Each structure stands twice: as C-alpha cells, then as structure tokens.
Length: 587
Image (cartoon, rainbow, N blue to C red; front, side, top):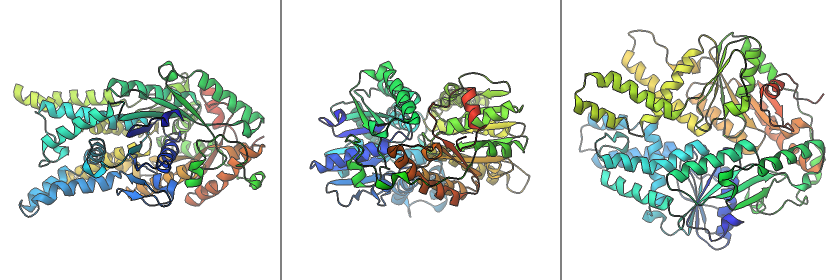
C-alpha cells in the first residue's frame, strides 16, 4: 500500500460516509501494530463503530485491543468528553464559589457547542503532543464523514484566530479554563496538521462519481488551511471473482468510468485500489484480508443459499405519507447509505402527484442538485448552507440587538458573533424555518450524517427547554422539537444498508431519537444485493450476508421499504421516479 510507505506519526482517514474509512483505518492500525509499532487508533466520529469492528467496548477511554499487542483504541464520545470537560472546569472551584454561581457555569457549558468543543479539546491534545500520548509511534484517526471532519480540522485555526483577537467572549471554553493554555495547544495542533513530516491525509472513496468528487472537495478545502500531501484509497471495487452476470458487468463498468473520470485535483495523488470482499469487515481475520486481492477462495460454500425476501416497495411509504396532505419527512442515517437518494425519490413522487414539495438538506456535503439533475414542477429545492446561514444570523443580530448599542458595544457584539459557537445556532435557526413550513405543504429533509444531525437535534432540544423555562405555564407554545415529536406532523425515515455496522448505527440512532421523544416512522434498506437477486457465487455470498440484517430490521419496526442495488445510479427524474414506481422484487 502506497499510503503505508514511510508512514508518519499521524494518519487521518477521511471521506464521504459509508466508503469504508473505519475498515481501512482499523486495518492500517492493525498492520502497523503487527509490524512492532505502538499504535493508538482514535475515532473522532460521534457515531463511531471501531469497537464493533474489534468486538470490544471502547468509549472515551484508551483501551487495549485483545490479541493485538501494541494496538490501543479510543473513541472520542461527545457526551462523555463534554461531561469530563465540565468536571475539569467546575471541580477546582467546587466549595469555593456559591452554588448559584456553579449552576450558572454548568448551564453555560450544557449546549451542543460545548459538546463539540469538548471533543475538539481531546482531539487537539492528541495532536499537540500531550504527555499522555507521547509514546505512541503512530496515531491513526478514523474521522467522521467529510463535513464534520472539515469543521473539526478547521477549528484549531478558527479558535486560534478568535483568541488572538482577544476581544470576544469564549464562554464555551469555560470561564476559568485559561486562555493562554488554549492558545498554545491550538497553535501546536495547527503546526502538526500542516507538517507533512508528521501528518498524512488519506482520502478514502468508493469508485463512485459523487464519492470521488467529495474527496476532491475535501482535499481542496483542507489545502486552504495548509493541510496537503494527500493519498487516495479507492475502496470496495468489484473484483474479477464477482463473475460476469449482467449486474456485475454494469457495476464494474460504472466503477471503471468513475475512476477514469477521477477529479483532476486528486488524480495525481498516490493511489491504492482495494477489492470488495465477499463478507463484512468485522473481526481481526477479516481486517487482515482487506489489503490483499480477492481471489474467490474466500467465498463460503453455502453462498448459493439465499433466502427469499419479502416484497417491500418504497411506493407503499409514499402512499401513506401522501394521506396527510402536508407534513415533514426527515431522512436520517449514517453517511453514505443513500439518504439523499431516498429523500429525492420521495419528494419527486409527491411532486409528480400534484403536491407542493420543498426538498432541502442540512448536510454540509449535500449533493441534491446533482441527484435531481433537473427541475420538476411543484418541487422547490434548497440547501441549508452553513456559511449563508451564519452570515444571515450575524446580520440579523447586529440589526436587532446591535441597534441600541454604541460603537464600542457594536464592535464587541460583532466580535462575539465571530465565535465558532455561532455556527450551530445559525444552522438551527434555518432548520426551524423549514420545520415550520411543513404546516402548509410537504417538506422533505435530507439530513447530515448521524453525528452532525444529533448535534442539530441537541440544539433543538436546548431551544425547547429554554422556551419552556421562559414561557412556563403562562401561555401555549409549539417549538420545532414538539413538531418533530408529533407523528401526525413528522415522519422520520431511517435509511440504512443491509450490513452489520450501518444497521447497528441506525439502531443506536433510533434509541437516541426515542430518548428525545422522536419515534422513527419507517426504515428504508437501500442498495440491497439480496433484493437484486444476483446469480454469481460472489454476489450471492454478499446477498446471503444481508439476510440476517434485513430480518433484524423487520424486528425493529413494522414499516420497511427495500430498494435493490441497481445497475445504474438513480440520478435524474426518470430513475428517481422508478424507485417509487416499482416493486423490490424482479418482474
């Protein structure tokens, strides 16, 4: 593997959700540890599944991986990190300050912004040479999907600039946390990230046009903050062992065309191509096989035995949604499972039935326009653009709160609004607007990958608690959270693949949502090889591995739709319409 040659101390694996970053990062950490190096594998994904891959519980504690000497792992859990972060700030003054003041500090550190900062704080300590991590030969980062990771990697520079100005209110960092320490740590993190001798960026992609376009976008954005020298890994390419049936030929041709048209900015980077495997990448034995070619010898003998699956067309879900006449449909799930495709297919179907529909996205890496590839009467398409939302929010605050201030007050307010904390508030404000729209017509939201969406919902919950506290019992009110909790107004659709990790993560998302009083309405299993009814042993082995997960989804919900893996990507009105017009069973 080219990306493993003369590996530096820090390796970052990033890319679109669902491309196999975790598998490649875990296999890399395993390879380095087996060569005698001491390795720390770190997940910065709020929806991490590194523990599931190795079959151990990890969490926010450095944990040895059994049977692999020299390999340890850490999952930066946002909630655990936030709790530890709050305790580090409050503990030294407990007993010294009045309880009311301590309560005020705790309240100021209870929002989603502090959760993000706490994760970020741990991340920068890893990069800045904290003595706790000094004796590792390599630290391998398995990162969250692209949008979240770009923000994480940009934050050291953003906070360094903010603190350098020295005029704002860095309340998220904690009022007693010591700004000089933060300045030094963040500056060291920036130096490590931008030094190719210490940091290597590995861009992981599938052989798909949208996935390859996203690594180009990531590469260019990270170049702007000084992170360069990337490597490309194209993961999960259909091997010759998959045979020559029509589906295999079409997929292979699609992959070859995508690789041939790889975007110019990343075309010249050192590149490795990894074969798709017949089974899931769970367990040490499976990870050890990832960097080897797929010969066909790995195909199990019982691959020919694929159970029949129940027909579950997406059209049935659209029929039920249409009965309400208006409302909100939110497509959620792990990155890369096809949320955008499912959201676009539902929106197109409703618009073609004569309804007014607003299709929008909260995903910073959105590609709705590319998926629709044209306009449809009755369908409005938009994107909650974080940069535009932040600017609009700053302008609004300056025009309202800033109106009555003098020049010094307005300058101080403008400085506060440059804080990275403003970003989450601004995006939540835009999100609330489209939720309100669903009272009048259909609104379909393609959400960001799971971790980012949970942060947004956390902001929604914080807003609800604040309104409830202010209004009390004096008058009625309806917050965005209350609309999300009402099944008559909101239908949450969980999108997944028929694979172990995506189903586990969707199950965890279901639990997180239910804790917030939001009950998922339906599940969609996308890109199912089993539903495509393949014939060759390799693809039948992949299909057989899906049956357990499809069965499991049916135990978690009574409303399921199944979309088969298609020879061509469902892009454009005609192909999206086909997703809601056809049975999931072959004709």
